Length: 364
Image (cartoon, rainbow, N blue to C red; front, side):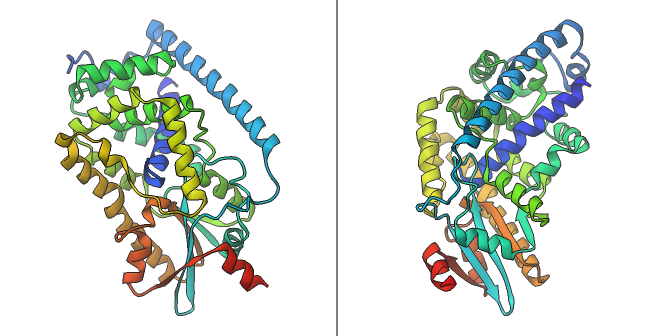
């Protein structure tokens, strides 16, 4: 039972961070191996960790319910006039689809889509997303498989892969928030980055559960639209295999040193860019130490460039199948010479930006 609860917690943490990363980005001695760690979650340690977990869950539920209540009472009934996120119409012959860049951690009113976006969504039979996270959250089998893929299987732990300073800082940060259990030592950097990322967003007062993915999933279910997966969990987790131990050390330590107020400002800026349909670009490279630049470039290529091609392939597949799809992936994947928009243009598709003004003119 403990493992099942842990698997669900892991899945929740990982899925949230996968969407954040891909949507809009922003050695001590080994005491246990994976097998020993799993069997050691019993009696007194289990009680202590259960207490921490319950405290964290209680706090999370309370905050979530409070935020939800606040959001419900402050919802607008009409779209904001300045709410003009980027959307493109793709055509070739009599086939067409819409491209829409998503963002995680939206703000009040995001669910009230601008008329041109809502109209395009209504016209489509399918909603395509990077992952059907809602389905995954309700599949314990997938949670358990995902948990296993995120663990070291060579007898090492995270302490063998990052510095003692970084490990201690991460443990201290998570312990203070009631989020640390020793079993996490058996997980790869992705898990640690996920936990720290989510904790950092929570400190900044950012509700990462209120995403464009969750908004559109809800709309699709109400409209009985089928949800298609552009990628799968193996593809997305594969990206994190490109994080070297040195880069992981830098990333993990940076989260423990993050200023919540600065993170809130950065997130608000990112949201405003997305809200106004401005290009979303990766700007993290300036913060990477010179000795890790090459590792970061490899990771960035796997995160964006390589995946963009796979996403464009999937969009083309849907077009060839004659599916009318509302194709929504992280906004950062849309822009640039290697973005989905340009890739489809290069393949002979007509890709035109749809704006609110144009939509209203056509309607008139």
